[in-house]
Image (cartoon, rainbow, N blue to C red; front, side, top):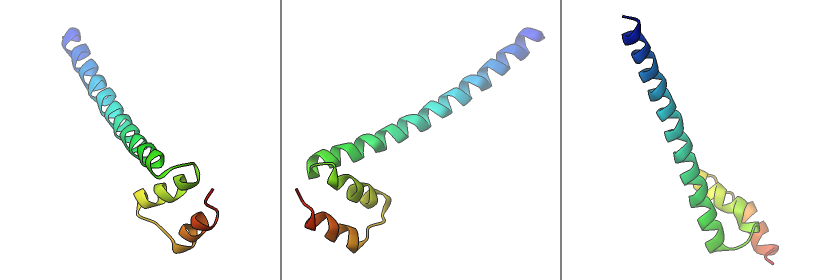
Length: 71
């Protein structure tokens, strides 16, 4: 009986581990996506604007800031 119980415990631990790594991978994919956009749109200055775009929050003020200080 003990062996069987051990197996079940390990199985659920494995499932938990898988779930955790899947979440990590999704986050990494998002980061990579953002970084690719940053490279396309150029420079560190655009980073914040792009991140805002990804999260769906973009203000006109910030956009104007980036245009004024473009370098």
